[in-house]
Amino acid sequence: MEKVEISAPGKLMLFGEHAVVYGSPCIVTAVDQRIRVSVIADSGQSLEIEAPDVGLSGCLLEIDSLKNNNDLPKGARFVATAVGNFFDGFGIRSGLKIKTQSDFSSEFGFGSSSAVTVGVIKALSELFDVKLKDQELFNLSYKTVLDVQGVGSGFDLAAAIWGGTLWFIGGGKTVLPLKIEEVPIVVGYTGIKADTSALVRQVAGTKKEHPEAITKIFEAIALGVQEAKNALEKGNWPRVGELMNINQGLLEALGVNTRELSSLIHACREAGAFGAKLSGAGGGDCMIALIDNQIKVKVGEAITDAGGRVLRVKLGAEGVRDESNR
Ligand code: PMV
Image (cartoon, rainbow, N blue to C red; front, side, top):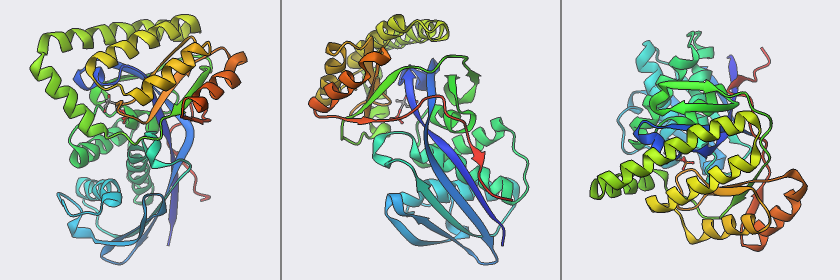
């Protein structure tokens, strides 16, 4: 039986989180840490999932039970819903064995669920010979993410599909690859797993209470994202750093910053970084600092001394790709 193997990269948000959920642009980059998905079709009636990174082994699901199923095991939701949506969309039905394996912990906030979703749909399209353009792969993946978690801009799916560093507008309305040099960044992990959906809902609640103020904050974030695009394209790192600090201040105003993130961010700034901010929904996960490469070690030590962990990643990695030897 034919086996397809696909890999897709994780991501880091550089600028524009939260505002992107309300139609503003963001800048996201793919990282060189990948999720691998292998899929085999068989003549059975079930989907078997092995996902050791999320503690799932020998998980057996009926093919007919994959959609709108609230009882799916947590680690199986994105895989199962992706398969259900693909089969529905293209009138296909088959038994499947799916294995996922990650270069990175799902705790880091690198977008493992999105990379898995993209990997599964891409693998199925190869296996069943369905030609999917990148935008179609995005649309089906985005439907899957909304089915599972109800909220999200889809920026992480875009990074998994197109790779590189992208200018992205919510729902995939615009996906523009940016031409930029390698961005000298250090990534610090707080050790705390963030709940992205809960934070997006929290910001929605704050916006309901203070619609004008929050709308103005989103507008200010969007202005910064536009300036950051220009500064990134020129490789003007001091300016990009300043814009990171401004973006961080606005995220603090949205209420998604934490003491732990702040402590890593301030440690990096004190160690000489051009700027630093949280990356993603806030509440934990990672922060990023833009640096002159000469002080990389010093900034890394500052993160460790402040209680964080340095994650070594390269930015602008390649998007989803077929790894099968066929
Ligand atoms: O927590 P992360 O790394 O998945 O980032 C979430 C970014 C948000 O803008 C808050 C949500 C979204 O889907 O764009």
